[in-house]
Image (cartoon, rainbow, N blue to C red; front, top):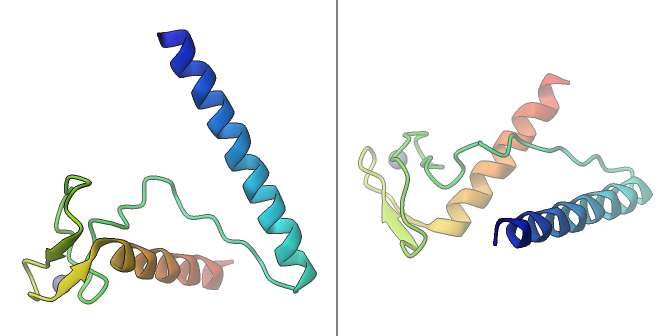
Length: 94
Ligand SMILES: [Zn+2]
């Protein structure tokens, strides 16, 4: 069982690294830069409106309301906005 898990994780790692390599290659065609954010960045926990960290939520929670500013978020849309903003922040540092 552990061996199977380890093998499937290896396959996932290879697939992910191939995806990133292709993404960087294609971005280079268009003079764009791929910026990687920390894999532990809490994109689905932060409110993209006020920045409040609302904590972890189970995967089945698809919408949530920020306990600080009361705005309602679509989980994936909010996370993608946070990832975009983090990438832009990192690009301005380098
Ligand atoms: Zn908020």
